[in-house]
Image 1 (cartoon, rainbow over the protein chains, first blue to last red):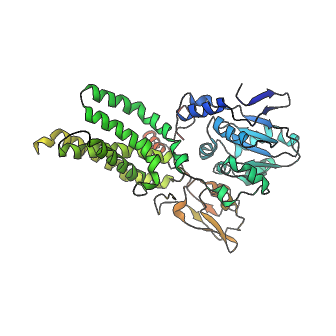
Image 2: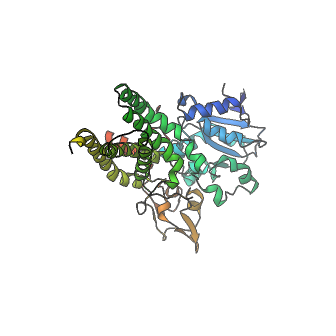
Image 3: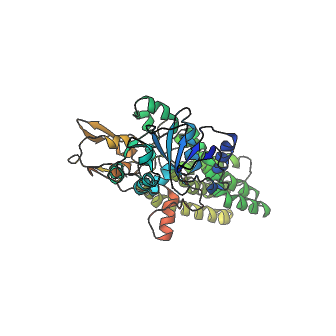
Length: 322
Length: 97
């Protein structure tokens, strides 16, 4: 049984609690580190929170535990129906981008849950970030239910309800502050650490202490420094920002690694290129990059990274003959 | 500190002739790209657009077009390698987004 789940009923919906427990917190931490992440699926369908009546509001969510927990735990003291769509265990925004949190799934879900017999109104509140997948006027045409877009963050729901189900401009804006960025670092770290931690160990075993350390440095620059320092790194391009983080890290670490100047230049090129490649992937975790922009910077960045890597390796191998 | 991505790249287009000023685009945009000015929608700063497609999909008057996509380097790479549209591969057991 999922934490927070209290009991099952025979009326086609399950009861759920608004409590956020230690087990929920642990599950969230594990999900961020990618530990058995796909185990965080919620059973799609209708849930009853508190003691909802026919006039209680309906909130839709994704069947990803972190999304569902954000919704139910922010509805403390509120009785509501929670409609969980089958998004294959993906959060609302990403699922909306792929279309699984979408018009057809929402229409199907409204119909199959028997919602129209349980409530006397015809309104479903969606998280605003579901909008890239849902066409509100089509859902209305298919089901008769009208869609209200709620706030971006579930924590604003009580205020949203208090102000007559109107989301203020502040509630509608996606933020990407330090806390929102750094929580994503473990995902990036585990993704690239899978290759670069073994690479760093192998370099160490071959006696290449400097390169072992600098490989780890590039990994940390691209996965941790980029999220942490994003607004302060130079330029708008993620490749440029990440190369800068890589160069800074290589320079600082090189202070502890005595080496000829040509080797420092060579390693500066290699590890800035590596950090640039790694950090460019943070575009996917960011909340403001566009596909057109990513394509544009990749067209320039990938050849530049490859050239820098090649130039660095050649310099490292043949630099002493210069 | 506000974060802004590359300038002059967005595919977002607004046709004021079809716009009725209903304000749905203002409601769904996560980056406040739209405002209502003299009873019609207007674009404040196109460089704020992340091409999520919410506005176009929720405009019942088809006044907005945008080439929807995810701004994800991994997705572009996957699409290039597989010869498909950009796809982040989320939904399998991947750990992205």
